[in-house]
Image 1 (cartoon, one colour):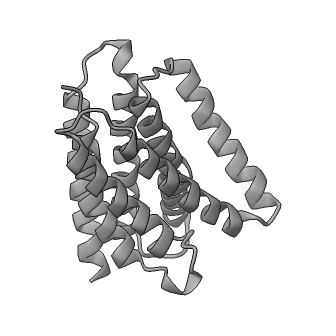
Image 2: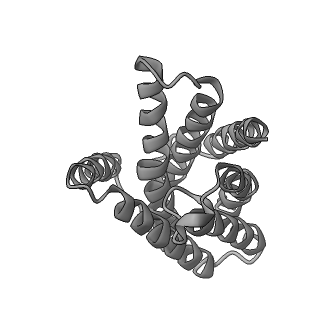
Length: 195
């Protein structure tokens, strides 16, 4: 069942990435939408790695763990940040997004080495969920609102209830987290489309 959930997540997030990328032009004003496409791509790569790499020894498993961390500790905060920036009609430059991504890597590594990895994962879940809901509330295009609301709520529920940073640790589930992202990501990126 886990394999099916991961396969569906890989397809859904891959589709979301391609769809979002095709909606953007080379205009720097659409950098927020390109970041959303990149986040979806990171999640797709993580799902593919979890699906294909099962051997817990060697370099391939290290690659899998790196892609899982990239999806959770970089893509999820980037997704929430891009959602807020889009809803507030703020445009960050490419270097600003690059610095934010490097900062997320550094912060993750620092807290992991300080043995606060679990608390940081829970912080990511709670903060990203709150920011996604806030971005949906601020959506000013009425025809985008239902999709953005649905996608934001599904992703927020997956993060807070079933992810590795679930606020109730006994409820962590790869299957349910993947299902929430599978349904939520396409709705979320389509709800953030520019009209």
